[in-house]
Amino acid sequence: MAGDDEARLVIEVTKDFGDRYAEITAYQVPKSDRYPEGIKYSMQYGNAAGETVVRYDNFPDHPDAAHHHKHRADGTVTDIEFDGIQTLFQRFKSEVIEYGHDW
Image 1 (cartoon, rainbow, N blue to C red):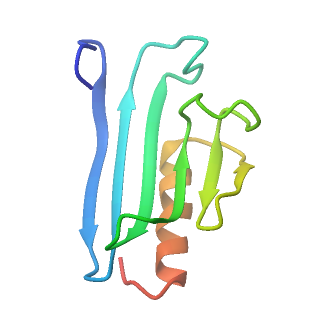
Image 2: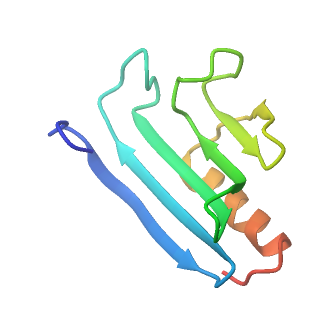
């Protein structure tokens, strides 16, 4: 994260499945109103055209969504439970596997 010397990368994974891809990044950041758990993350599973199949993130740019939320291919954004970054990472990987891609 440019400009934030206090951010520490804790997960960075990129998977190329040919027609689809997965990109995961998570940073430990100072706790704040924006990131109360001290973690900033994005877990994107998309197609070769750059379209989202599923994405989890906690970017506070969706006023109608909870802090932790999931984007779907149809454009809907739904609230999710956040039980820690490793638990969410496992959930994301399971969903990618359900779409037919081995992790």
